[in-house]
Image (cartoon, rainbow, N blue to C red; front, top):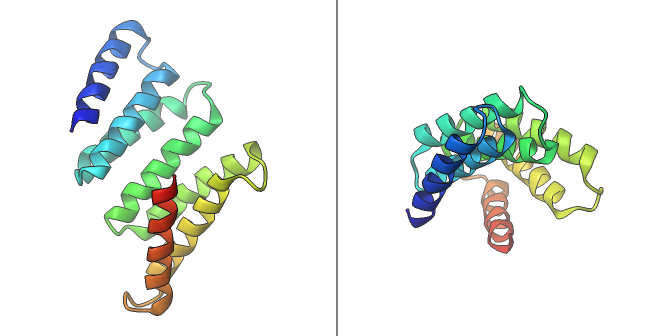
Length: 145
C-alpha cells in the first residue's frame, strides 16, 4: 500500500506535466496496475494495465516497456484463472522480447516458463504432478527477480 501511494503521487505529477498519451504515463499506469494485482484487486489492475496499453499501442514507445505491460496483463489474467487470455498476452510480450533481447536473456526463460504453466493449467487436472512442479519452479523464479 505504501508503494501504491508513491505511484499515485507519481502519476498525479505526470498527469499534470505530460501529455495525455505520453509513454511515461503508460509505464506508471502499468506499475500501478501491477501493485493492484499484487494486492489482489484484479479489476483495478486490469483497468490500469488497459489504460497503459491504450497509450503504448497508439504512440511510439519503448517496445520493452510495451512487452512489460503485456506480461503484467498476462500475470493478472493468470491470477483470475483466465489462462487463455493470459497466454495471449504472454505470447505478445514474448514476441517483442525475442526481437529485442539476447537469446540467453533471463526474461525469456521466465516467459517460456509462464507459458508452459498456462498451457498446463489449461490442459491438465489441478492435481497433476507437472502442475505442482511448474508452480514451485515459478515461485522460485519470481523470488530471484
